[in-house]
Length: 331
Ligand code: SF4
Image (tube, rainbow, N blue to C red; front, side, top):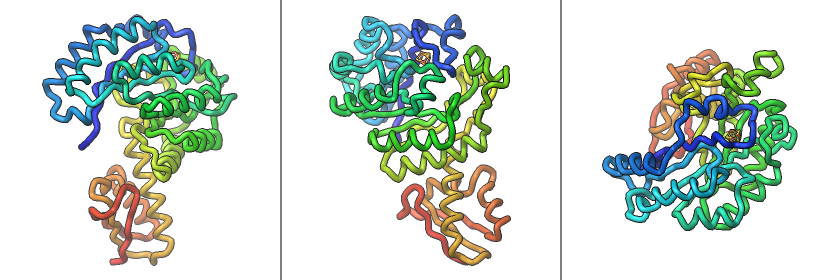
């Protein structure tokens, strides 16, 4: 059954950091602080409509959950835990900074039924972390990941592409480092330039050039395939639509169907590789039935590209195939 999250956004207005891409300080006036009452009301409502309790998690997102004032953090968890205890939801996941993890905070999370911890790693390149004013080191990422895993939590890592000072090669190295850590899940976010951020200022002065959507799709599809081959689940590719992204958007590879574009790109490359051994003409490509639209591409774009290369493609489903597996028959 499909996994779902009940997302609760915890803004961190008192954050002492100033990450280059983050606009939480400048928009703090318009963000309402999440209260325990909000948590109760949201979960109470969600419980009534939830027919998939085991596969639904309560998710405290916002990036710095364990760095917010401790009493406040506990008050949110105290409200959420009874819902997990009575079986209304499968567990609680939180996202936080690598330097906001230690044995003490992990023991509190455990006590309150947290099952998964996601760390905003963003990059494992020391220079990129510094330039983007992340305020933590590469070593913090490795250390925190080990602590999270050793304490029995599911580990998620988040990485970004196209940061200030970043490059294709540096992103590949970050992905290799993440593979070596062996998290359970990964999220990949191409950097979007938002109004009210340091990146926004640099962009306006011409001192920062964001990735194009094509560059970001190419890179993220390579990263996604790498994680897939290493049995690491990619649970998000690109920012969610809505929220303050569209409002504060200045520049960068934002696309509401970014994940789908990347996965289509992966299929295109697998197909191209396999077609090298097949003579041009009519072919049928078989993929898992759930993946047909990705192989076909948005508005048939993959089929069109292959047609230009001499292959008239028909895409069909085959239940015996897993994601990214394909069989090609000449017709
Ligand atoms: S992204 Fe950076 S600046 Fe923004 S809240 Fe998180 S740690 Fe603070």
